[in-house]
Length: 60
Image (cartoon, rainbow, N blue to C red; front, top):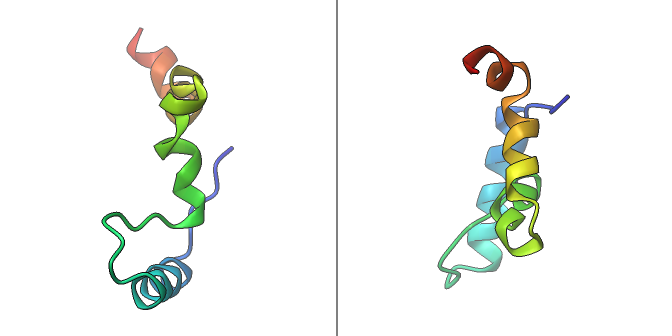
């Protein structure tokens, strides 16, 4: 089961990334990288299925 990121933790990390890498075109907090790079790794369908969990079975 996936864990939600507490809002304050997310904001702290995002702000730290913006301060450390202001020229970066994309800001990715650590917990979203598995989703962002799923296509590159070749497991995007599995990642999406994991995120959808029981909802995918309900839609079928």
